[in-house]
Length: 350
Ligand code: IPM
Ligand code: MG
Image 1 (cartoon, rainbow, N blue to C red):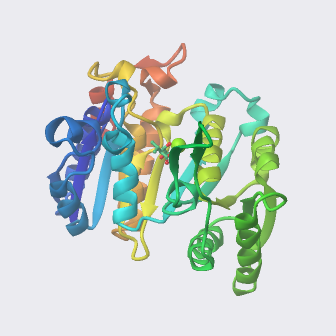
Image 2: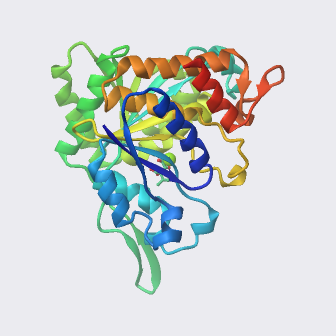
């Protein structure tokens, strides 16, 4: 069981250090090796996804990532930006299925900007296609045409790409409340008409799952109006990027949300849903819980260690119940702790 650790940029190294301590405490004989991705890799090698990282990531059974990016690298040419490293590793490892849970912890109900009754008990899973769509479509670029600059990207999906993410979503719904909402823009975009058609074709294979469809603009609205109507949502790369940020904010605590990006054999890259937070990097105050919960997802999806995954999730619930909070989820009456103290508390609860 080999895990490639990619601390990345900003708060990435601090939060991954705590997640690694949790992995070590499980005593499951993991082999861990660290490599560079994102801005840290650009600084060291000029490449956001260097060859050494590619080799290690390909060999490993799972990858744990902190976060990439920061203002320092925003003005570099596009091929050298940290985000390119993230997109590169997703594509290179064939990580087409991105699972982004949005769960509201009862202790953190006040953190949401929505009324407590609208979000109480919220538990949504967004299944986002991650290696296709307008993110990777060719042709793309900025050119001069007819004497002015012209920007263009291409949205496309093959039916097999839609089918394989559809199956992941139907299977996930099966293990939950058996409701799947497929999100598209079929009233305008042909690619997503195909998306809807393929989802409808798949449905008879999953008679126990109730499939519904929603246009993306309406889905964005419904997520803030009545988010509890959703169980599992499945959508393409671009819409999934936007809706998953929106869904995470319903919980008010993006610092708590893990994610998994899986290939066809459950090899996965696990990372917190939040970014590299350069403004608080190096201060020891970032919330490590999303990364620690990403380790739980790793144990569940890649290593089939459900009981170890539950142990971690219960340890996190316990530290919340004890009233420990990092700055992002702090409220009066709770105890403010730093990154390492939060890690210590999770280890103690384990
Ligand atoms: C995400 C991020 C990435 C994406 C960026 C950093 C390339 O927003 O994982 O959602 O757009 O996929
Ligand atoms: Mg995003």
